[in-house]
Image (cartoon, rainbow, N blue to C red; front, top):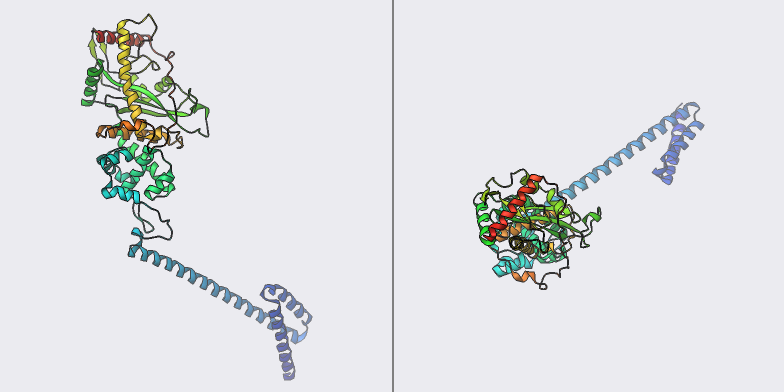
Length: 471
């Protein structure tokens, strides 16, 4: 029995050596094939005690190899986890060291591109006079600082570990530069040292802040002392009592939109959106309606505006009529022949040769002189903010916000005493050459729905105003 066991041991030893050599030659990728060969060998030797011992020995070898593979996988996973933790710790330590050492304040960063901001450094270094501020930002330095103080909470951003936020002054300056010069983002990038994508984002944010914060304050219907001052100024200048403002419309050129292109194509053959505005005696807008396609008429735009709805309900102005020659004249607006004649909206008499009386012709001349207020206000608006003169490539959905921001900033400049430079109306200089966009001619309104009583009242008011001028 001992002899048999010795022989069995020798046989099993030789068998294990052959199996290990076979394992080394084939590799771990063919473990399945080795198992099949071992099973074949086991089947061949499955008789007697030797076969039983060999079967048990093969089973032990399998378990040993499986445990070795599991151990190697665990070691590899542990090493990978430790390497990842070391990389994370190194990145955190390096960023923390940069923030502590002050590299983020003005040094070069690995994740940002070095840009030059020498222009803005020269502006803040008191190299700009008030005239330079007017030429470059279309407003004085005092008005610029006032805007910064009013918009700071809305447009200010917090510094982060990665980079410092763009100051409020730079954000506002880039927006005003874009509105005033209509230059591309590449030029602004070179001047202020800010990337083009960031400039585009900041431009929208500042315009939205101007509309949401400042527009309700500076673009609203006059009331109280402001309304009384407007009525007295209009009567003193033009002899028209109860006049509160002049209504007109301006077509702003745009690039052809991707959708509904034909609806933006106006009568002069270019794409536009319409700005309807009411102007007071100070060339300021106190009501605007912007964004309608250029194809529709001024009368259609007027009939769909909130101004028309409020005035028709009698809530636009207080019920403070004035009796003139026995006729109660309410507070009214003034428009051209494209608008309907209403008790609160006066339009000129139709110029038919040999039909108008001297009083009616005189009334038309006074109305034409008063309507020049709107033309001057639109001219100042376009020349101060030149982005309204060029074919605007801004998204059509954002155009109402942009134009409303321009109107609001126009009012702020006018009311804060920032004088309009007549040289801005001339071509040339640093501004890009403007295109010739002739405003569509307003067609006389013919089909506005109106009650007979309102029509009679409106005609009576216009007649008494013309006679009052003659007197």
